[in-house]
Length: 327
Image 1 (spheres, helix red, strand yellow):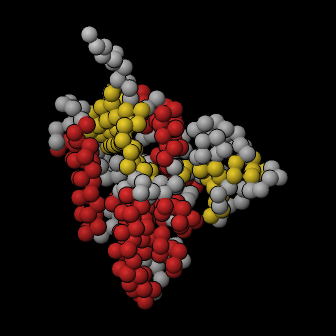
Image 2 (cartoon, rainbow, N blue to C red):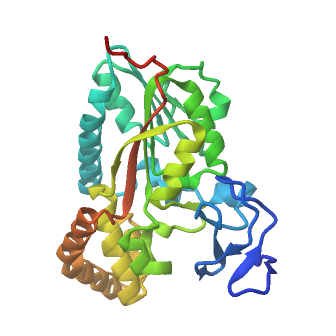
Image 3 (tube, rainbow, N blue to C red):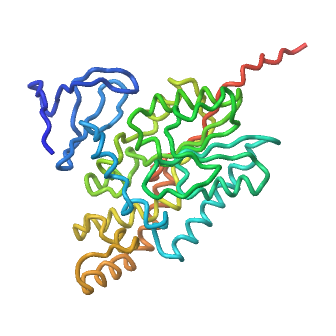
């Protein structure tokens, strides 16, 4: 892929034929680094980091084939799948108190619908959204459409989940505006994205596991994500920078990428696409075992300092209730 860039004449500064989707700044845009064949640019107005140009059409569809989702929507072995299901259950336990009686929940980017199933088993009306793909299994509770195509009624949901999805969307602000429309007053949005401003990302640079170019169009730091949500009309009520599901492995694979120029090969091995010789696979496994505990300690330490690898925010749509007055 080659792209035409208009150099402004100042150090590492370019003009692009597009404006920032968050603050509409038109540049010039600095380039934090190039991860060939892709280039990252930082908005001078709000700090959003993004790739240009965005993939579209057949290129975009090709980024989400069976090798990405896993055959039959199973990415890993049975043991790892069980672990991920357990972590999803723990996240559901944290979300459940925010749903009142009769509350409706929407999980955008629901994968196999594990969270949707947990919510429905608990007596809630829950639905999921996922990208359409050949052979997608039928479920009356999962829609394979874009959010705006679903035409949900206004104020229909009490809660919306958007875990590790926002960075994949060509029009993130449009999606957030639609979520705001369909939430009832006082309703909440749980959003999680990789933390481009965290210690894991800063130390790893182009070797960062969660950079994931070109599937991740946007790289968020906490101030940028807050500005994006607040610009749509949300208020932020909770913030966290730790996700055991993502941060431990993100640290481990990023280290392996740097130490052994691993290029996410250990991740591919876990997904059943090992590549290389049996000896090379054994070397990857040995390196992962050696780094596993130090990586866990590093991920936890980063989170304690507010520099974890994942941003998780709970945002609310204002209830519009009049403020109470004292007598």
